Image (cartoon, rainbow, N blue to C red; front, side, top):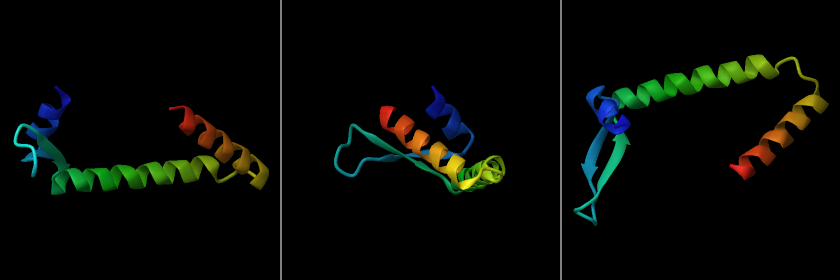
Length: 73
């Protein structure tokens, strides 16, 4: 199970649910949060690098297409 692997890596932790003792809440640890922030910065930089050379019209077409795709998923 992926959750178990992420717990073993110290990236997430399981916490008791405040209202349902049968359930657990999963959240990022400080290490997991740091990794997420690093990944997010890399993703934003990659997106900027890829789209930097698009003219305004092409950038708008791409943005509109991504909005439509996100609605479908």
